Amino acid sequence: EKKFSSGITREELGRNGWTLLHMISATLPVEFDEKFTFKINVFLNLFGQFYPCKECAGHFLNMTTILPYEGNSRVDFMQYLCMLHNEVNQRLNKTLFNCSIVHERWGGDCGCSSKLEESIKKYSK
Ligand code: FAD
Image (cartoon, rainbow, N blue to C red; front, side):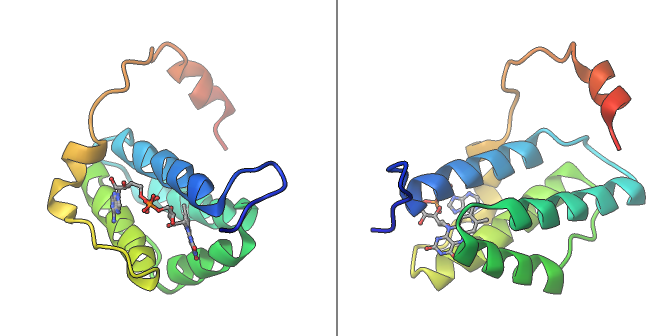
């Protein structure tokens, strides 16, 4: 089992990493424009560059570069991410996830306040 010196395993990091990614996808705007799609790809690229498991990051950057996201909606991006995650599942000989139930697994409101949305806009680049 691969462990960082913090005691965190690659698997734990992975579960948390996927949780973050899928939760982000489930809370995107319902529909968005090309500029936003571009931003998503920048985010995926930076996520890959900063991901602590560098071997994982290399695969992830490879996948997202060969197959960048090209859609324009939350539902569509959730499917894209499900497909990316399944690529990793396949490589690790894990059971493939049924992407038709991805919304049941990750969708829905987190119950968090949306009061900060104005400041998100203010600081967005
Ligand atoms: P995980 O794969 O972590 O999944 C967590 C939960 O997500 C599952 O219980 C299930 O409910 C749900 N889920 C599973 N598949 C999907 C899907 N396709 N779509 C939506 N939801 C799904 N590990 C390596 O050893 N080598 C790598 O190269 C590697 N690359 C990674 C790249 C990234 C970007 C990330 C975030 C993780 C990577 N990992 C890698 C870790 C690996 O993918 C797993 O997270 C880890 O092995 C733990 O697996 P798990 O079986 O607990 O479930």
